[in-house]
Each structure stands twice: as structure tokens, then as C-alpha cells.
Length: 502
Image (cartoon, rainbow, N blue to C red; front, side, top):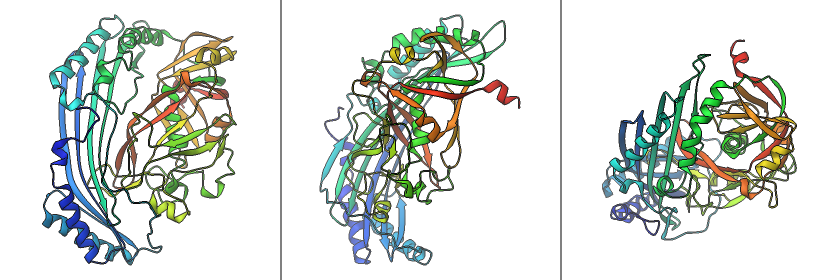
């Protein structure tokens, strides 16, 4: 299946009939707002270790839900029976929930206005649906990857994984918006592990391939150079195992997009979610230092820092045509010339602040209510900016950072620490081998204000994650982050071995 249409096995479900039954009953009960979703989300995971298939499993999440605003409060109910009686029952249950919640709701819920989008179909861009490729064919690729990695003397063990999601949603509301959408996404990955025989040091080296809003063609086509990376990773691991431990202190950093995306995610993406900035999201990973009173004032970073939120970029993991509140998705500025100028918001938050929603409502399951979730938040390149080699040439003493690994950030998205897959010394403008045990540490504003230059479009890559968590009960969302290679001055570097011993 290409991206030319919605899966007919989904459109064959009684989407309109169930939506009309639920919404009709909600209208009869006098609600101020009602929306309906019917979703089918398919998941499949393949895992290979040392050329042996360890796991090939999958499941399907299929159900429907009704959300209402009644007496100024939210009501929500979900179920799995695809019948009109169940749709009506869920509408009644959602109203009952709202009636209970009304007594505990201090500020009435209102939604920012949104134009009607009637009978819309949207599908993400892909060529080959991975769910139409046999498990045998997919596992053979992963087995081959681990065999090739283990052919190198350094590699003792190798793993390869493939996560795949096929998501369909039908949305309808009382105002007349009705959308049917489909998204395909996948995350291929591999990792090589080894031990330095003389020192006993154990470590690993992983692929820096991003998860993508593409199909199986990302694995078998020419969208990513798997062959070159599979050949390079064992040598990189061997060099890393033999590398000296870093000397802590201030360094200039040249950061590759495969590492910088995660710093963007944690210190900019989460920090500029409006529900955090307003204090409504506090329990799960905290609020934000970038409070709403600082909009248009906060010097988030240097003048070369321009960050956008974007739910429309092709192949982005958070890309969709219309969000889970019926809002057409958009792209907008979050940081412009280093200054905070925008947030990510859904319709309730938009109404509270006198704005239009920028399409950031999302629920990861028909059993969950939509919440404000992250867009594809990306650092923009300099149109005529330098390439990576030129940025490295500007550094006398520094580190070139490639690939993500672990991270830590406080509950207001302000103090952080990040590690990486590969750290290369830079001496007099040239790479001079790897070092180990490295972490960089800063506050969000100090770090982004230390950014002296961003690379040109030729250095920009769209990276991201499948597993961004938020809310209680917890929800998981996929999100991409684009970044160019970027240069930062005088960043504090820690030796992680030394820190672990304290």
C-alpha cells in the first residue's frame, strides 16, 4: 500500500454510523461540545540477537471513545464494542463523568474556535507498508545486520530491532468536522558490543539512524546508507574501547544532529509545551522555567537560534493532517533570533491565552483522552551556513559529539546533562581520535546562548524518538526533531567515571 489512500479494512468499519450515534446522543443530553474517535493502532516488534530471532510480536489496539464538555467540565468514556448501542452508552457515560467533574472544576472548560473540516482524508508519506512485508523477510535483514557486525573481531555481541506502527483514526465532532487519517512509522536500529581485552572495558556502539515516518523502503531503499554504517560501527567501537578517558573542564562543542535532537527535545520541546508553562502539567516530569509571562522577552539562546514547531513536515513522527481535536496542523515559530515567541498548545490552552490552537492535541489510544503533545520541534539551519568540517575547523580545543545515549534534566527543564555515542577530540581544527566517559552539562539558557553558529541545510537531519512519555495515566508519543550541526563555546564537560565515584 502506498500513501494514496486509507487502509480499506479500516474504512470498512462503521465509522460514520458509530460517530453519528454517539454525537446525536450527546447533543440530546445538552452538551456544549462533543467529539468522537474510533482508532485502530497496530504494533509489531522484531528483535534479533547474534543472528538469532528473539522476538516477533505484535498487537492491535481497537476501540472508540467519546469526549464531552458539559456544565463546564470534561467527560470522557471509551470502549471496545463497535456497536451503536455502545456508542450511545459511551456518550451517556461521558456526560455522567462531566456532571461529577463539574463540582470539582473551578474554571469552566472552553475550546478555542476552529473552522469546520468536513470529510477529510489524510495519509502520511510512505511507499511500502511494513505490515505487508513478511516477518521472514524483515527478520532476514536484521539477522544479516548482526552477522555483519559480528564478523569484526571487536564485536562480541550484536542486536538489531525493528519497531513498526500503523495508526488509523476517525474523528468527528458536533460542529461538523470529520477526518479519517493514517500514519505509518518505523524505527530500525542495531548495536554492537565488545570488551577491550587489555583493560577489560566494556562498551557498545549503536546506529545513529533516526526513527522515521516512512515505510519499509527506509530499510531497503536508498534513504539511508546502512551498508556504510554497518561497516563503520565495529571500527568505531574498537577505537572507543581503546580511547582515553576525557579530562573534565570547559570545551567547545560541535554537536551532530544525531545528538542535538535529544537536547532540543528535553530543553526546548518539553519546556515550550504550554500546559507545562502554565503549571497544568506538573506531576510527570514537571513544569517549565519558560513561563508564559516571559513570552517575547526570554533570551532563550543566541541570535542564531531559530526553532519551529511543525506538525506538517514530511516524514516527521509527529506529523499528521488534523489533530485529535479536529484542528488543521501547522508550522510556527517557537524561538526567533534567540527569543521565546511561541508555545505548543491545544484548543483549551489556546482559548485561555487568546490564540488559535496550533494542532498539538493527541491521544495514543482510544482508551485515553487527548492531551497537549509535542510537535516536531526543530532547530533551523543557516541558509548559507557552513558544513560540519568548517565548524570543526573553527575549534582549537573541543569535542565533536555524535549519537545520543543517556540524559538527565530537572523538573523545570533547566539544568541538564547529556552523554553520547561518540566523542571525538578536536585539536587545532581537526579530529584527533575518540575519548570516553564524556557528558556535557549546562543550564538550558546558558547552553543555547553559547551557540555561536549553526550549520547549513546540508548538515540538517530529522532525528527523533518513538517513546516520549507524558501525563497520568501515562501516554507515549512519537516525535521528530530536526537540527543542523552546531557549534557551542565553553561548555562544561564531566568525566562520568569520576562523577560516578563521588
